[in-house]
Structure formats: structure tokens, C-alpha cells
Image 1 (tube, rainbow over the protein chains, first blue to last red):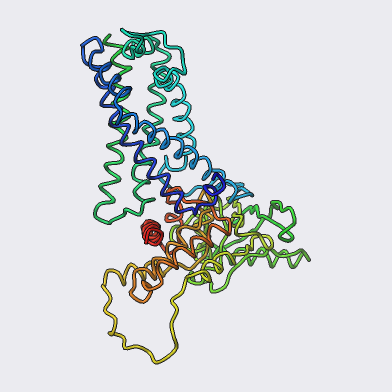
Image 2 (cartoon, one colour):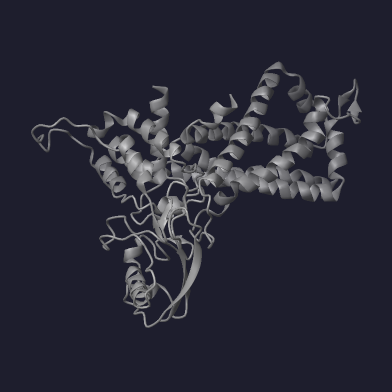
Length: 223
Length: 246
């Protein structure tokens, strides 16, 4: 199985990366919408209700499997492609390449790696707590995790908040190139619409990055 | 102008190459880059030293034979030109110029700056053609062709197969070359007939030869002396997807 994935054609691998990436980008919008519930001054009622829904709804549970598969595929192919790409140039140039390219496009594997580290930290704090892999010490009612309280505890730590903002900004840089690159990889290119897609790519990445960053800033300065 | 050149010297494909430093003096700004190397080679021959091997042929920017990775850019610091069309007025007196061969697993060094680009020929042999039966020449207007498609096909066909796309790409990917060749046929009715088999065969050959994967950095497009657009890569991806699902 793993060998057949390695030997998939380069274009197929691009397709898979793009599909998984787009799925993850759609999920980020849902995630942001839930996170923005934290800004309501309701003691976490909406946020915990959303977290409860995400943790218990059967349709969401199915999508959770799809989402995790999406993560794993995107990460696996990202690493695989990078290794193959390094192998394609066994002798490096002495002079660093000076070709003018979109700045962030060259560093996708590095921004992706940083996002992966963030993902692990994030899972340790939230998702693993929900599925019982990490001890759940902040509960409400019948032992259900109180994610609002978990969030407040985390963002009360300024170092964590700043780290969170830096990592989310990196995610934003990753998305900025990722969104339009996914369309190129899928062959969805058109002289009329591609400039719009590129523009939307920037807008999307800013909305996601700023949207997620508002929350720690809100907790740091207004709570 | 006087220049310091750091040039990659490698005896043969298996030898371990290294950079050698040379000084050239009295070079005219009107001189082409290859002429400057010719002058250096003349002085080396006079000193009974081996001249530097580098590819060249037409010296008119159309054959795709010249290469050279000059100061971090394929075909040097000028835009949209091949190395033979690069002139010394693009450099300053006293400059140090580092000259390297194209670096790619699929383009092994033959000697010094000369590389083996047979990989591109193999990709073409895999499907970069239109099969025709022999016979009389068909009437020029018997196959109607959309003007816009004809222009796009012509733009793609401008690829001279120099390999600057591979040299510039951080992944040593040949996607732009393959995409240009796939596109020039896929856009025209004569090429559509075999389009599906063609794109699958050419992509498979490209992968087999050890080129890297595209990560959409568009360095290929930026360095292409013939301004082949990365839109062709999207077209190739589309063609490939359609071929696989049909």
C-alpha cells in the first residue's frame, strides 16, 4: 500500500495534496466560526454547545474520520513530495537561486512543518482531551471537557498566546500560497477567474489568520 | 572590463567536480556571454590547458542548446533570453561571476558545464508527437482551428527545450517543459486524437527519469527564455485528470 502511494504519478500526488488541502481549508472556516463564539460574553455557553455538537453529532463524527484522513494524507504526501524533490537534485547549486518567485511558495514545507507542530500542541490541548488520550482535568457536568475553560486557562498565559499568534500567522502564510496553488494543481485555471482566485487566496488567508488571532488578543486585553 | 570567473570543472560524468577561478581581462561590454567564454578558452588553449566545455549551437537564442546557471539564475541575469543572447553589459567591471551547470538528477554532467539533456528527448519519444499516415498534404483550411487556441498552441510550441525550467525549479521539476509539449498538441484538433495517451505517457516518463514534483513556485515560468506560461501546467494537470478518469 505505502509503496503504491510512493509510485503514484507526480500529477496525481499534486491532485491528492490539493484535494486534501482544500478540504482542510473548508474545515478551517467551520473551526473559525466556532472559535468566534468565544467572543460572546455568555460564559462559554455557545462555544461549549458547539464543542458538544462537534464531539457528539454522528455526521460530524464521520467527517472527523475524513478530516483526520485529510490531515494524514496532506502531511504524508507533503513529506513524500519533499523527499522526492530533494532527491531530484543530488548536487546543489553553490549560488542560491535568485529567480523572482512568490516569496511564500518556496517555503511551503517549512511553514507546513511549523503548522504541524502547532497541530500537535493543539491536539494535546483539545482533541486528545475529547477522545480521552490526554487526562481531562477541566470538566463540566457529567465529565465532559469544558473547552471554554481550557481556552481561558491557555490564553491566560501570555507566552502561549504570543506563540499561538505566531503559529497562526505561519498558517496564514501557508494558506496564502496554498489556496491558489490548489486550483493550479487541480488544473482549474482560467484567464478570467485565476486572478480572482489569487485575490481570494490572499483575502481567505488574512481572514483565517486575523480571525483566529483576534481570540487570544481578546483574552489578553479585554478579559 | 575585467572579471573573475568561478567555473565548475568536471573531468567526466563520474568525476568529482570542483570550482576553478579564472581571470579574464579586456572584455568588451558588446561581447556575448558565450564569446567571453570563447576568449577565456583561447587563453586556456594558449597556456596548453584544457578549455571549458559548454553547450552552444545557433547562438541566436532559438536552438535551446546553451545552458549555464550564472550567478544563481539559469541563462544569467537578463530576462527572457538564452545565455547566448546575454551580453556582458549586464555585468560590471570587477564582477565575480559564478558559472554552474544545470543541476538535476535527470541532467547528468557530461563534462564541465556541459550536461546531458537526453531526458527531454526521452519524454518527447514517449508521446510528444502526432501519429500521421503518409499521403498527400491535406488542404490548409480543411480543419477549422479556433484562432485563440492556435495562438496558445503556438505560444506553447515556442519551448526550445533548453531545460531552464528544470534548472530554476527548486525541485528540479520538468513540469513546464512537459506541459508545453502536452499543450501544443492538446489545443489543436490534430493533437486531440492522442491527447489522453500522450499526457499519461509523457508524465510517466518524466517521473521515471527522476525529475522532481511541481510545487507551484513558478520559478520555471520566470526563467523561461521563451516565456512559456505556467498556465500550461494547469492545462496538463487537467488533461491528465481527464485521461485518468475516462
